[in-house]
Length: 392
Image (tube, rainbow, N blue to C red; front, side, top):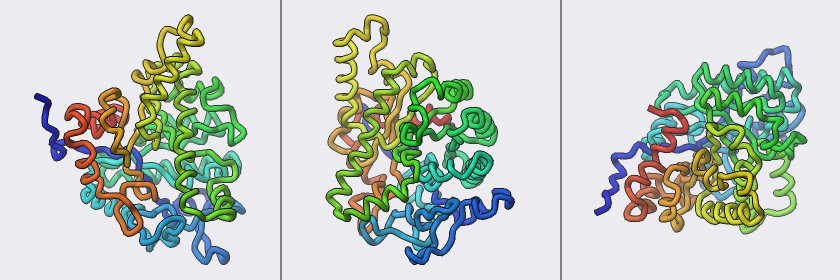
C-alpha cells in the first residue's frame, strides 16, 4: 500500500518569490559621489506616478511588480508602494503572508536589478558594481527577519567576470545561498552563458557550493524590460496575445536547458547545480526524450557516454507552480523539480479579484493529493530545495 500524503507534515519551500525594492535602496547605500546616476525614485509626469529612474532612463512605477491581490488584470498594477501588498516589501508582512499561504520558506529574487540589468550595466563599472553590492547587502538584511525562512540569492555584476568572482565570495560570507545568473547574455552583447568565457564564475560557484539560478527575463534586454514592455504595449493591448507572449517567454527555457546539457558545461562542472526558475515541468520529459534520441541518432554517444537526460538528473533542477494535469509525471524526475509561487508577480499563485489562483496550500492539496506519491511530493515541495539551498 502506498504511503498517505499528509501535507501538514511538509515544510513547503517556494523557490521563486520577489522582493520589491524600497525607493531608497540605492540612494541610501551607494556613494553620493555618483550623483544622479544612482538609481532613484522620482515623479514621472507622463506616468503620473513615482517611477524608478536609472541614470537618464525612466523605468517602472515603484510598486508595479507587486501585483498580488490587485483588483484589475495586467497591465494594470499598483503604481505606488502603498497600493501594493505590504508583503512584497516588508519582511514582517512577508512572513505573515507565507503563513497564510502555507509556505515555510521562500527564495528571494529582485525585481529592478534583475529585469533592468542592462540599464544598471550601462551606469559604468564602478557605479554598477556598487549598485549590485548594495542590493546584495539589502536582501541579506531583509532575510535577516528569519534566515531559516527567507533565503537570499546574490545578483552578480556579470559584465565583469573577476568582479563577479569576488562578489560571489563576499556573498557567500554574508549569507547568500546561491547566485542569480542570466541565460541569454547574447542579447546583452556578451558571450552565450554556456561558453568558456564564463567558466571562472562557474568554477568559483562550484567550489563555493552555490547554485546557478537562471530566472526568466533576467538580463534579456540591453535597454531593460521596461523599454521592451513599453514597445509591446504601444502596439497592442490584447490579453490573448499577452497570454501567448508569456508562454513564449517561459518556453525560452527549452534552449537554455538544452545548452546546459549539450555544450560540455556539465562535463566541465560536474558538481555544479543549475536551476531553471519558472521553467515549468510538463514538457521536460519530451525535451529529454528528444535530446537523448538525437544524441544517439547523430552519434554524440560515441564520444560522450552520458546522455542529456543523465546530466539533467545529476545536476539540473526546474520549478513548477500552476500546473495540475502533468503532475503524475513527477515520478519520472522526483529529484529534479521544486515548487514556486512567483509572489507577488501577476503569473503567481496569489489569490485576488483578478487572479485564477487559490491559496498555495489549497492549490497544492488539489494537485498533489492522490496524484503524486508521498515520497515524491516531499521531495518536490521540500527536500530538493533543502538540498539546493542548504536549508536546515
